[in-house]
Length: 331
Image (cartoon, rainbow, N blue to C red; front, side, top):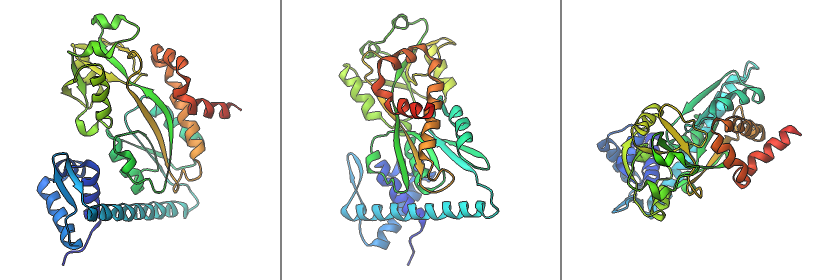
């Protein structure tokens, strides 16, 4: 009789996270038949069905919930074991090991790495940038990265955070990128409703952690966005915008090369940026230092877009955590 392997546990967790065998297979780099075969193997071993197929996707059965919960614990324990072994191996000769820092695409990450060099003893800093926060959280829990900057994503509350310290860094408004010849680009703020008939540039669905939120704010503005261009690379996205499309944009983004970056009226779309630190490894016991480093790095890129610097001054509630960290650092 076959035995359960770690790959089987990762498979059932991926299906539960994604709500779809197809998306779970893509996430793990498998074909759908291979994913289905792994699921059938687990179901034979545990003696029951783990997921119900519904119009909304694959939903865990009662047995499935128990198996997924246990699988997460096992994977977390294995990740911590691997992380601990690496740390002890690095420390055996009295030298600190490497610090592996993960992140979703941000404009302050380079500054963050430089600030971390000042406060975390380590042999080197390596980085892992992933397009989606869901996969990044999985790497954190498994110990593949020791700390990370990630954005809050839908379904995050159902994920396992064992072994992590998680803290909100900032509540970040999403701005909009427009072609510089667009009449709307002359306004200080852009009404989201005025973009109802535009073609939008967006990453692929599996990398958009707040897709439901986006559709909700657009629905409130009276339209369904047309995500015509699926792009996960900045220069191509900017080229499409310069030639007539529009896109949500990080507020620190600079205009130029045919585009302008403007705030949305009323700031309808806000995204929480989070800082997660493992309780073991090079950053163990230094979550406060890590947070101060992130606060300094984030504040350093604020002048990139004067419109965001102005928004920042009028919305202190969005960055109270950063302000407090910088105040302590200056003191």
